[in-house]
Length: 392
Image (cartoon, one colour):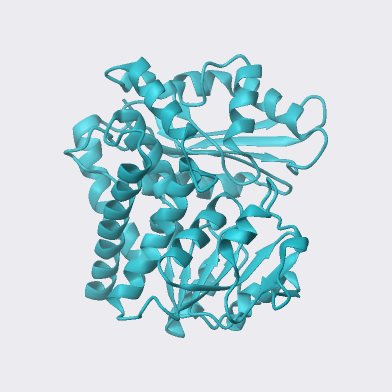
């Protein structure tokens, strides 16, 4: 793989905390990718995430759409989100990265940060918007900003459309794989790590499709019920970080250790919380037939190879969780309106088509879905570069 276009390391002058920005590629002079905040975040991690964003953008390339995929980038801060000094670190990081945000890095929430926190910190850092770099590419900047703001203000069943778009995409990716394998939705069991932004919405859509959510892990441990958890009750009882109030559990719900979600008796496993959580030390505990990466980089390559050898299909993050990013741009560029039904219908169609294309290529070439996705990206990037140039 070629080196990224730009790699920046930063040290907070107040706390000594480290932060990073990696721009993997520019398209039309702009790159897209969120900002994560977690204890232990590294430059290597951010570099991998930035490469993943290049892939997610390229996989959604449609020459007929208003939204033209951007380049890939990612930001990261080595600080626990719950640290009392975390917000100050975030604001100072954004001030330091201000020239990049203004010119070519569009970003939003990621692991450890909510969009509300990002927007507040962006304003305090003196920036116009976390996506202001893309404004020169818009035909009608004010109409586009209103459309995105209106879309973010929409809530369905107490969850914002921004959260729902990502979870809908993960769910549709999983459902496409089930349908192609002839696996009925009713009776298929799901175990998730994480009930936050991505995991919570994914759980809602999978349960709505008839699947049975039998285990959910959060910061306090795993909640399990072989007969099925009440997903909506758990969503209503979670805090801003996705931790469920145990007072909302039913008598038949069990509390298990945090790692129990991994070995739950379920056909579908959804890591939706942290990176690198499935490795060679624990992959043998997985009993699922499908692993759907709602989080970024949750399955290490060596573990994925072992899972594939056991007949376990891993739907990669660059496909499964790509709707969150794409929804932003579909909305901002005007491919979809600020309307929940139409937006989610667009997500479903797009994710069904993309996942199907990846699975078809994997089957035809005898490779994993990840390898097939990488091959599709390799096909599409030259077309994007030929049309728009590599850096301009």
